[in-house]
Amino acid sequence: MAQVIDGKKLAKEIQENVTKEVSRLKSEGKQPGLAVVLVGDNQASRTYVRNKQKRTEESGMKSVLIELDEDVSEEKLLQTVEELNEDDTIHGILVQLPLPKHISEEKVIDTISVLKDVDGFHPLNVGNLFVGKDSLVPCTPAGIIELIKSTGQTIAGKRAVVIGRSNIVGKPVAQLLLQENATVTIAHSRTENLAEVASEADILVVATGLAKFVKKEYVKEGAVVIDVGMDRDENNKLCGDVDYDDVFPKAGFITPVPGGVGPMTITMLLSNTLKAAKRLFD
Image 1 (tube, one colour):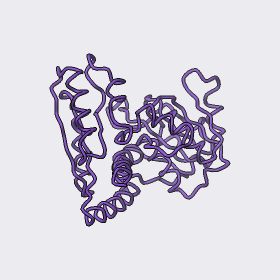
Image 2 (cartoon, rainbow, N blue to C red; image 1 turned 90 degrees about the vertical axis):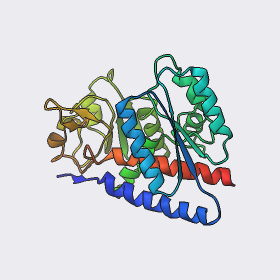
Image 3 (cartoon, rainbow, N blue to C red; image 1 turned 120 degrees about the horizontal axis):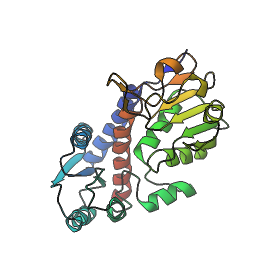
Image 4 (cartoon, rainbow, N blue to C red; image 1 turned 60 degrees about the horizontal axis):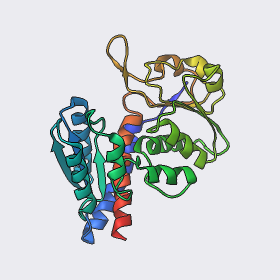
């Protein structure tokens, strides 16, 4: 029977530590600042941004929101990013994705200063992660590592399987697990005998985007199961990529959806902003 990994509780603990450090910096006249750029009126994006703003302000950081129209030119958006790069009161820049089709996400990410890229998507930060240099790491993968560590299970020497190979979750989390000395397999839709491969994992990270895709036959007895999914089931109820009820009796530890990986993502954004600020203050 699995123990539930409480992402809300862990996120709260990490945010409290961030808030204390922000308070210390402010006592020295240094306030970390995060700017979020929102293009258009995507309701899901707006909700994410509102939550990010709220948590940023709670931590004592400066929070700036720049809203641009859906039909804003790519040139204008890139100019806005450049202005934030030059702004000494802003230490983290996040352009909320997805962007309208006429704007190149790649160009926008490349334009964000590597020192202020708190999403960890800039090619230089990605490269630093892959060669093992200190860098700003994508927030969800960073949060996943913290969730695994919170179980008290050792990562070093363990067999880890990541199902999913996206640039945002699958690849970076595999790299972070490798840095923690796990033996890592990246599996995906073309992997033969996927259930068999997954069932060998001591640590199983699932990021497929397919509701309730992973069943108990994918899970090793006692494994740590991290569910990155955010889906809707046949009853339109929020669920993950793991069939929670089916897997729960077999896993050792499991993240719920909601309340697992989700809360950690914004907390790691704050952590990244603090890290970026301290580097820039030095």
